[in-house]
Amino acid sequence: ELFEEASDAVGVNFKKLCFDASESDLALTENTQPCLLLVSTATFRVLKSLVPFETSAGAGHSVGEYAALVAAESISFPNAIRAVRARGQFMQSAVPVGEGGMLAVLGLTPEQIEKLCVWARTESGDGPLEPANFNAPGQIVISGKTRVIEWLQKNFTAEFFAPEKPRSKFIPLKVSAPFHCSMMKPAEEKMAEVLGGIEFREAKFTIVPNVSAQGTRNGKELRRLLVQQISSPVRWVE
Image 1 (cartoon, rainbow, N blue to C red):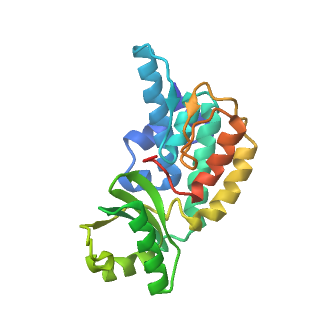
Image 2 (cartoon, one colour):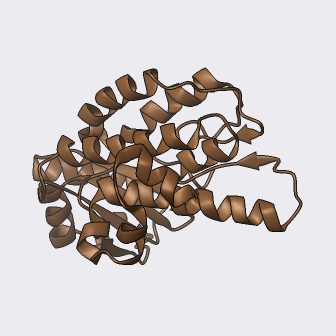
């Protein structure tokens, strides 16, 4: 039922997209984002039907925050599907393909990541390059211009952090755009218009947004933070 509801909302065959489409089709962020919301919401509803439990709080990583808001009945599922479909299109069109990217950095602290980004921007004479996802202690993703990311990978050595010389590793991510950095500002502005036309109700349980890492149920605040989220780092560790 939920797959049909999603398909009707945006005119996309989500059964075909999720189960039969090529990896390259699914990798397009305008497809990835609604598929993630759809499967997350379906999973939550199945769980609720099988296990009696009361939800005390919710959170979602990046686009997952929309699923948390649907679960908390702050926004309706059809509105959320339409919003994340648009979000994917806006984020993809904000930066030409190939001009931006993301790099997972393992083994460094948030303070070291900040220092690394400033150094790369200054020494390469290009930018932006910014922390994007604080995913776990020792696993932070940075986001920005492809040229700066490539410069960093070529020029970084552990001597930069002497005398500590922490062991670190860089892993380029297979993404189609530099999410959660200032290059996403054009998408944020367009998303403000879309979300401005959607009703956000008081959430049934506390939501911890990516931007603030502070729990709230207020619909207007949840909408505002959802807009800011596009070009702000995901503070998942907090």
